[in-house]
Length: 434
Image (tube, rainbow, N blue to C red; front, side, top):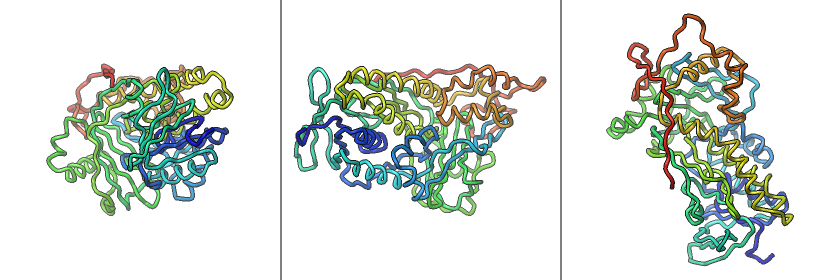
């Protein structure tokens, strides 16, 4: 191969792109890894840092797990509060993911990828054009001085985020689903975290969580419904603190210190695209960007890149039918993440729980079988269909004489059964192309 000819050209040097580049190279491929930011230690700031346990096998396969452990990453588990039974406490002995800030993880992973034999990291280069007429055959990249290079390869991998430029260049449209919450968060030290566990409040429609990370940092997030925007615009810091203080069993910030400014994201719709077309694959947020409330972004970036390499490396290196391999990846991606993305997008509407969901939340607080199904689904190790097995459904039947309460009306972060209104109709949000 010449200097600008590769087996795969990966655009985007964050979680998904670095994972794909390293795994392809370990399989014997020559890979160009294109990253727009020139600083190898650059990192993403808009992230919740909760990596679901479904991604742990890929993290271990990369050789990243040991590095994360050395830098203090927290083995995560989570306590989950709902109005239907209160706290669902994490049980011991379940698989763990990692809580780790991106300022730690991103440089570690990028160095790991760049040091892999077969990977050429092009830091500070931007993909500006797809090569090829009938199918992608590489990309044109430019550096800040205007230097132009053509990087050619049998496969182009788009790891360039939810607003993927490569998707626009290729004419691959995504489906956009609206989001009815907004987010403000900050980093704190001194926030008590029982046994190091994360905590999440699922209030219907408001949400919140505390995620402990390395070095005693704790991400404390408020996720109000959009009908509270004016309240926050009138004074974000005060509204943020009032919101947290009004939570049931709220986080104890009395002895804590806020270590960062308040960060915010007001509009974060869910986006999904076909995970592959001939000659071009999408990984991470470029394929599916779901509600960050559930901590799936990093995990799905690791996993989707892993699945892509597993399905296509043989064809890519052996001269096989690459498009057939990409079709297998697309089906695998849809089968594994499609149901989760649909459910997450539905819950992002801020709707109230339906009777089945209420029964599940209540039962998961006390029944280990239901908890295991709830936890395996929430960590994305198993399909949401797991919640509908006969053995699980049989345990959701309410005790005779008990009436399940309705959820709080929209706009309330507190729980007051005397003012709640019943509305059990499930809501499925619409979508638009982008």
